[in-house]
Image (cartoon, rainbow, N blue to C red; front, top):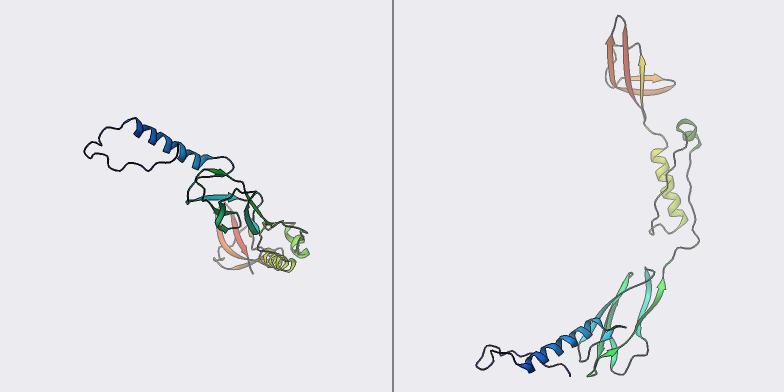
Length: 213
């Protein structure tokens, strides 16, 4: 059996009760639609309608992709194809009156990372003062040259090699100190950001300072 156009005059005089032929037509049309959607090897239904196929590459991203049909039968061809880095949208048309099966092949050039290089930036003075603090920049396909990577590494190092660390210390205290006053501790200058004074027969204090620029 073949596809039959659906009946559109239900409800009219004499067209209210489905008969055997009606049920056979409906069942056969359902079977044909199922073949259209689920035929193995990218089945292509008969007629002039194009079947849209979305294909995903095994190793994206891919450039210069080209879609083709592997030994297609007569009357089956690709009528449209749009290529992306992750895959392709392909339309296959069958002009025959019977269903056909075809295999879609897409060939292209996958982009892979080769000959990796590493850019390193370090400051020996900062390492002596603060110890070794490691940071690894996450992989980014937009960084494509060693000079770009080195510029990023140098910029990151410049922004963190002299950290403005806070210091806390217990000492005898000085009530005259105000917020923002500068104090020197072990040769380093700090701004006072907090001071807690306590009297227990003698004056003691806890001071918090922030390293100056």
